[in-house]
Image (cartoon, rainbow, N blue to C red; front, top):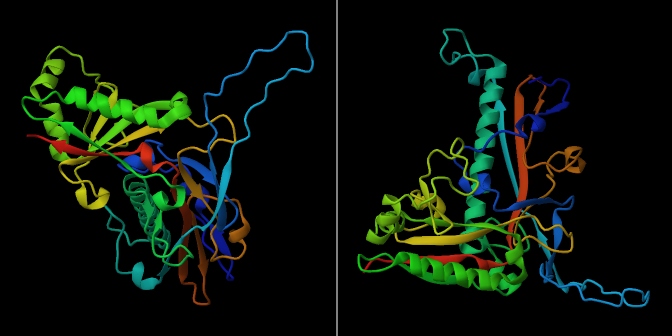
Length: 346
């Protein structure tokens, strides 16, 4: 990393473009498809185009008979993206009293800048993951206090879809596969034409639901005869080592043990579909992460949009001001496609 002088700044954002977000499972699974806007206020178009429209037949040699694709109906919503700025000032007190990790040598200014930069990125990764969880599981954005949508933006109220609910029966005498299959079928019916874009389904399960489902007697037989698929749906174990999972009836069940961070109780779960990106720009992805511009640095406010902006500047005493910003809005266009699951172990 280069350092600045004469009140100029250095933009480090490119260095963090491909940094893996370790154990940020909602981020790593790509449930929210990324989109960008160069405006801090954005118009959201609620598109009702279906992916399964059928082409009509026509007379072969008639130039007057043509089919056409339906024009999607759209409702326009103007929403402001929240901004998350963080700033630290690095002075001699952050360098001189410390040594390099694993070395008797004194820490350098570059060591201090690097450590603070990584801390800023970790804060960004945690904030984005938490926002994904709130939008996906509770169809809301809770960081809108400085926008016109303050204090909370509820996607159910915006788009008119309520979250679905369901029950999985995991008692000893119950057949959890049947109730799981029922919930999957109901979800696919709600998808309509979006079903053609379906990649797979995750069940993010609390600890009790995860264990009761896995060790139910009928499921144990599947394990015994090797019916359970050992590989998850796009599940990278190298960057998600903290999460246990298994695959049951084509549903990847993931244990969400951090109840405080993700807000999933021990006997709760959320069944979430994952979609391919629509080929047509006229069709919105049901779950979209909209990334917007930053605003605290005048020049960088009009630069290319990045997920995480970080840069440094110096003052007259050569103290380093490290600043980072990010602006995002995780949109859940279809809260009804996420099913809030309750575990019934009776």
